[in-house]
Image 1 (cartoon, rainbow, N blue to C red):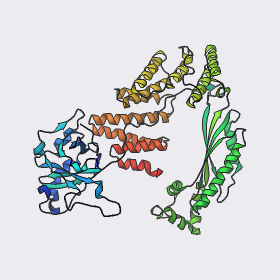
Image 2: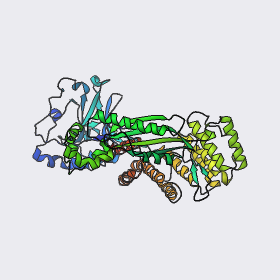
Image 3: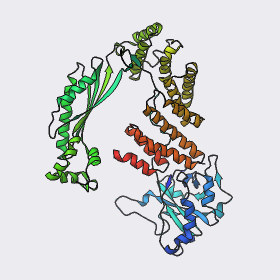
Length: 549
């Protein structure tokens, strides 16, 4: 049976009184509504949010369906319980004129003959996924090829107990948070302390404050940036600056001021190297932080006002002065620098790079080999070199070379379940030969989650233990937490398919309680919001997106 196109159901109680209507349907008198419809509607409202019902059309026939067959028997259980479909055409809502509605209290478009349990008791359809339903009748010819929706009327003993409108909401399941495989990096030799990773690429973020109505800045902030860059080892490839103005004053003046501030900073940073960096400059008023930080005791109705109204109120000098301690923190520039290591590997030809890699492996210089491998991978991702440049060079299967093997397997592209399982098998063999390497164990767990999300059978308890063991090692806690969230995203679907609704809700709650501890980008937050919406947790979806609106 087809999946339902209509996803969630909105309750609208009718408190109207009427006599006989179409197909002998009646409205209960308001004072009798609870007596007539109460027990029936209690059955409906006891249905878990994950169990959905609605209509779909196939080959000109309209079907009513529910996603859990056990709930059909609980809701539509008496002979005079039933369903009616109200077909509403888009043509009823012409632009520029009044909407065209049916002259009826029962329906808005065209009401088809209701179907009661006694009519279909021996004609209920089910499928292997546990969905159940029955035929409602033929779709009238005039609706074929046109835009229409089908709303649902719930009937009990000849009375209209509920009218449901359905809405098409973008939902998403199995959109996992980004979880790339772990690639080991070369280690620089130091005389004291732990070795530090040698990165061919890295990003650095700085915040530079500005005084009101001024484009100059404290030179100390730029000096700190210079000291942090280690430009003898790196060069700036991209300068991204978002300059924020506080919200008081004319918008065009604020944006112009912030653009000037950003240009001043960009020029200062460009002077530290010969090569010209790519610049990305954006200027905007800092409404997000203003509405987050504003003191509602000083500005009590701020969240009820439009931006223009807020600006008008801020023209009051006394109010502006009271808010100045807050506003001064909103005038700033956020600077992100993308750096690239100054190494001959980033300029060498593919042939030279491959030969250098072969030589370093032969000499057993794994640090050098890792640095060359990373450069080759980086340039391959940029499209400069082929992805398989180093694949033909044999790497000894001994412990000192474990990181090179890990990287070689991790760099392979795996999108299909077949590719993922092949990659997982390679990591598993590596782990069996050389147990105890966290980067390999991490990559195995990542691939198991990916395979699980694509339908592969996985032991959830064993996978959970594997992830927990990673938290005791050297893998960053944020990576482990992100993996746990993805684990629960897939687990929730498994529990739903098994109709373990309470356990599924606990998995959802884990995700909601833990996502805020991660640094998620806008795409991740949007996917989470769509994911929660697919489980009818629209309140959580709204809370996730609200700070970005």
